[in-house]
Length: 195
Ligand SMILES: [Zn+2]
Image 1 (cartoon, rainbow, N blue to C red):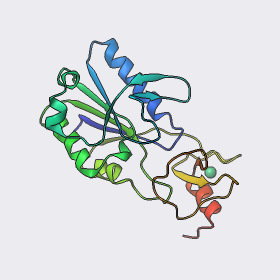
Image 2: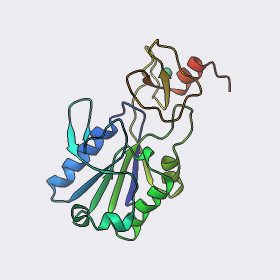
Image 3: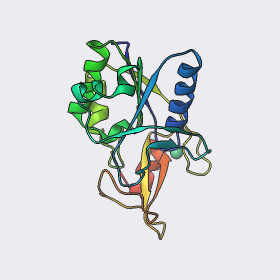
Image 4: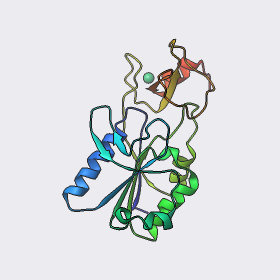
């Protein structure tokens, strides 16, 4: 169980930065690392980039299949698997990661979002909790001016700066929408929620 980890946080919590740093540390001690990212329209290049300029190569996979992964030479020689944006995979993909950890004794580190803009768990993130992945929160402050709470929610704004309600869980970031990582109090206030 300890071979499966989930580093989670909101947008801006430096999840990909953490992945790149972890990869670097493994490589430094001679450990072979295989980095996976999901297939998305937003970032089609086979690499992970961060807003502070760090980047590393990554293999793009639409689905995770244990047998197919094990046929990949770079994968076969790796002892550690790092998965970026894990929330965009499916629950069966998480089961594949469990098999890699438990049956093939690989160390699997996942990085991603826990909840979407509608305050719902992503299916992959939910399944990581269900299967007992070791959870590690990457804390970041609420982005609302003057707030000192930690962020655990997301607000989505349109190009006019108006908060979008009841939108899709996953929305392509095409420049027309903007996300803000906020605390629950600021989320409720912005949406006019009364619990
Ligand atoms: Zn706040």
